[in-house]
Length: 462
Image 1 (cartoon, rainbow, N blue to C red):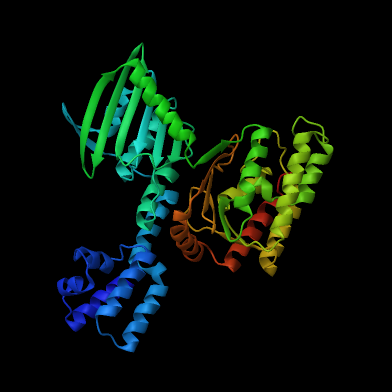
Image 2 (cartoon, rainbow, N blue to C red):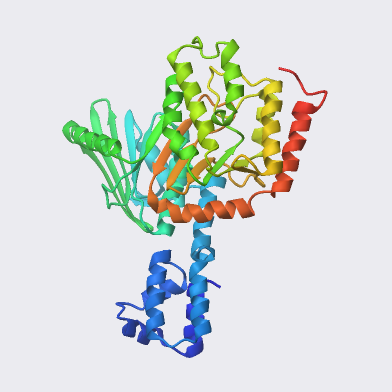
C-alpha cells in the first residue's frame, strides 16, 4: 500500500471528512487530497501535504511512524510504478499511431493529413506532445519519408510523471536522422505545425491540441512569413539543451568520446548497450590493434590516432578511480561481437578484434564477474525488455546511443537535466532487479557464449 492509499485508509477508518480536512488545512480544493490518495504528486509535494495532514489530525505514534516509513519508500508507490511503465514502453515497445483530427472535410487520421501537405521542403514541428498515438504517427512519418525534418520541442517539468511522458516522445524517435529534439521553454503551446515550400508557394498548417480536441488551420503564407518562422525555428533549435552527434568520421568519433567521457565514467553509471562498446576495450588490446596495422588510414604518429589512444587511456584510468558502473548485455549482441570481433560502435576504419584478443578481453570480463572486481557489475537482460540502449548517471545525464550491429557510426544524443533524476534512479534500479538474470546466471550465459564461439574447436578463425 502506497503512502497515499494508506492516508486515505486512515481517514476512512477515523471517519475524517475530506471536505472538512481540506478546509482545516487551508486547501483551495478537495482535489489536492484526492490526488494524494492516487500518488499523483512528486516526492517533495507528497511530503509537504502529508506533513500538513499530520499537523491537523490525531494519530497514534505507530500510525505516524508507518506514514513516515511509507514516505521513505515512496519509490514503490503506484505513482512510480506508472513512470516505470512509461519508461519501459519507451525502451521496449513499438508505439502505435492512430490520432484522429477534425478538419473542415470531416474526421481524418493525422498521418494522412500530414502526408497530404508534404510537398517540397517540409518541416514538421511538434510542441509538448506526449500522446502515444501522435508519437506513433510521427514515427510512421519519419520512416515514410526520410527527407522530412521533424522538430520536437519539449519542456521538461519537475513533475516525474509528466517528465516520463515527455521522454517517451524523445526516446521513441531520437534515432531517426531526420528527427531533431530540442529541450526548450520557448512554447506553452501544445500541438503540431508544419511549414512547406514548393514551387514558389508557401503553406502553414497548424493543429492546436487539447486532450482529444484540436483546432485545424491550413493556409497559404508569404515567403517573408515563411522565412521568419523558419529562422525562429532554427534560433530555438540552436539554443536548445540537447546535443546530437553522428560519428561517421574519425574526427566525429573523437568529438563523441570527448563529449561522452563525463557521462560514461561518472558515478553509478547505468549502461544498456547490449555488448561492450569500443571505448570499453582494454587499452593494451587497443594499443596492439593500432600498433601494427593502419586501421584509420593514418600512421600511428598521426594526431587523430594519438588523441584516440589518449582518450582511451583516460577512460581506463577513470574506470579504476572507484566509479561504479552497471552494464546490461543481451545474448544476441554479445554473440554478434564474439562471432565477428566487431563492437556495436565500430567505425568502418576499425578492423575487428582477433579471436585471441576477444578471448583475452572476455576472459577478463568473466574474471571480473566471478571476483566482483573492476568497479563493474554485468548482467544479461531477460526477454529483450530494453531494446533501445541508453546510459544514465545519477548526475542527471541521459545519453542515448544507437548501437545496432552493422550500423555505420554511432548516433548520440546527450541530455543533461536534473528533472530526470528521480524517475531514472527508480527505473534503472527496477530494471536491474526485475528485468535481468542474476549475477550467477549471467556469468553462466557469458561462459556458454564464449565456449561456443571462442573456445570450441569448430569456432571459425578470422
